[in-house]
Amino acid sequence: MQAKKRYLLLMSCCAFLSVGYFGYYHWKSSREDSLFKKNLVSFMCDSDIFQDEDISANPRARTRISSAPDFQIHSKRSDRNTKALENSADIPFSECRMENCFDFTRCGKNFKVYVYPMDENVPPSSSYLKVLNVIRESKYYTTDPSQACVFVLSLDTLDRDNLSKDYIRNMPLRIQRLPLWNGGQNHIIFNLYSGTWPDYNEDLGFNVGKAILAKASIATENFRPDFDISLPLFHKTHPTKGGEDGTVETLKFPGSKKYLLAFKGKRYVYGIGSEARNSLYHLHNGKDIVLVTTCKHGGSWKEHQDERCDHDNDEYDR
Image: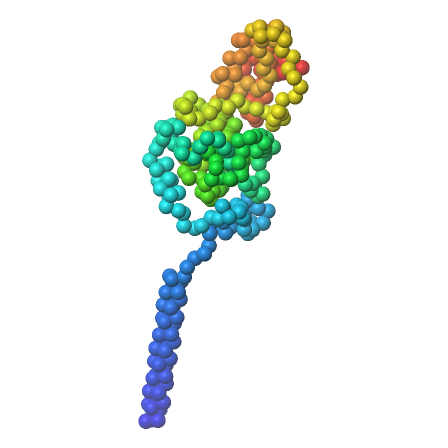
């Protein structure tokens, strides 16, 4: 009986010592691992962030904006960039003007424009490539960002309709990764289309900050006088350079051409733009003013067609 008690006492002591030893070892290991992680210096930079499928065919592929020394991106932003971003937030979008959102000290005697390096994962559309090529071929282009007065993105911002094949996603992240963004100061953003039909709101999907907007169809309430630039819409096939010399022989105005005004396009029977385009038929006289429109636009045009649609569609299809 005494031997049995001694045996049970021995087993209890062994179990207690085992629990105490392994418990202490586990606590010590966890504490050391926690301290190690806390003091571990991170060398990960923003350019090592994994991108999703809209950036690369391989969703786990890593990409870098550029390998050039001037474009090394660090996880810690410089005090200058941080301060600029804070100052940018202090100025409301509608109040941006050249005197408070543009840095003239960057612009010396020679006006120079810098274009960011291309991102091979998101190539620009043919239309935006024309814009960039015109800049690069001009005498104002510079490859040295320190000499630039104005900066132009290589990221295609012409079409910000999220249903378009040219729409670039994750634009806020891409903008933040630009080392020279500086809150958008001294940048020009080109845009022809924004929002989605039929509303077409003017949200570009990212904060332009202090950047100048060179935009088509901009609403008067969003246009910042003496700062933004109003652009005309141009077709994808629009040439970047003129062809042969013109045939103007006199400065007489108006000219002696047969047509004073001509337009052929869609007239929206509902949604934004419908009120203006539906009024075009009042100007059409079939002689020197020819305005030919069609109601066929979108999938719901038949539900909203008016009494003139059949006639207009026939004229348009002739």
